[in-house]
Image (tube, rainbow, N blue to C red; front, side, top):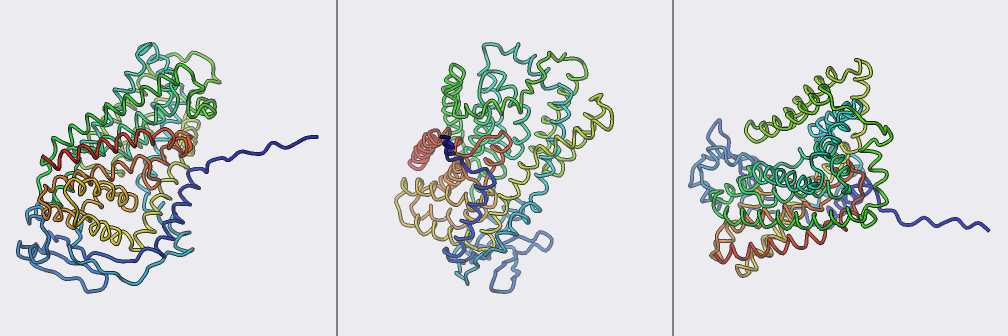
Length: 504
C-alpha cells in the first residue's frame, strides 16, 4: 500500500512575506488613529518658511529666529539657510488626530504597482547589473577569476571576509553604502562558495558589513548628519562614542561569522542552508562546464573594468551626489563595453545581457513591493501617530532608561519609516528637545535614533534584506535563524554604549 509522503512546511517566498506585511500594514490603518504633524520647510528663493498642514491653507512666514522660537523649533536658522535641512521638518506640538484613512483592498492592490513605479531608479540599476553579470558568466570571466583568486587565498580564505566586510562597513558609516551592495552578491558569492563557505557567510559579510556601518554611522550624511542638524547640534558631538561602538560591533560580527564559517567549512552538513547549497552552487559556480577557463587578456580586462566601475560608483555617491540615475548610466556604459569586449558577437552578446537582466527581475520587483508597504502606511497617516505615541512614552523617564527606550522605539519607527533621512527630519524636532528636560545631551538622541533604525534593518521586511535573500536564493526564516543571536548581542552592546554616552 503506497502512502504519499506528507509535504513538510515550507517557509513562504519573499514575495509572500512582503504581501503578508502589506496586508498587516493595511489592517493597521484601520486600528491606529490617523494623525499628522504640521511641517516646516525653508524656501530658499524667497528666504521664507512654508508651513504645510492637511487641514489648513499653507502659510508663508519670514525666515528668522523669532519664527522658529514661536513654533518651538530648536534647529538653528543657519541649518535651514545653508541647506543642511533640505526636507520638511515636523513642528513640535502641532500633532492633530484626523478622520481615519483606512487603506482597503483597492489600495492594497495598487500599492505594489505604484511602489514599483516609485522605485524605478533602483530597479533599472539592478537590471543593468544583472545584464553585466550575464555577460561575465557567459564568457567565463568569473570562473577564470575565481580559479586565480582561489590559488592566491589558499589557507587564508577568511581574510577575504574580513577585508570585504570591513570595506563595506566603512562605506556604510561614511556615506550610507546600502542599496548599492545589491550589485556585490553576484560577484562575491562564487568566490565565497569556491572558498568552502556557504551562501550565508557571503550574505553576512556583505549585508552585515553595510548594516553595522550604517547602524553606527559616524559621518553618514543621510542619517547622522541630517539627524544632528535636525536636533540642532553639530554632527561631531557624540562621534567618539559612535566610532568606538562601530569598531566593537564590527569585531563582534566578524567573530560571529568566523565561528559559523569554520563550522560549515569543517562539516558542510552543519550549514543552515545545507539543503539549498547544491542549487545555489549550480546557480553561481556553473560547475557543469567542468573545464579550466584560461584567464586571458579578454577576461582580465573585463573583470578589471567591472571592478573599477565600483570604485567610480563609490566616488560618485560619496563625493559627487550621485543617485541611481547616475549609477545606472555608469553601468549602462560598462555593459556596452562588456558587449564589445566579450567576443560573443552582437546578437549573442545582447541576448546574453537581456537574459542576465531577466534573472534579476524578481529582485527588482521585491524592491518595488517593499516600497508599496511604505506607501500604504504613508497614505493611512499612521506614521506621525506612532511618533506622537513614542514621544509621549519617553517624555517623563530617567536619563539612562530614556536612551534605552528611545533606541527600542526608533527600532519600531524604523519599520514604518524606513528612510533614514525621513525618520531623522520627522522625529528629531519632536524628540530631541525632550533630552533637555532631563538634562542629557541631544547627541544621545541622535545615537539612539541611529542605533535603533539601523538595528531593526537587520531583519525588517520593508528594508533591503528580502531583496538580498531573493538574489542569493535563501529564505527569510533561515536568515532569521542565523542573524537573531547576533542581533541580540549587537542590541545589548548598543544599549550599553548608549548608557555610557548618557552618563558621560
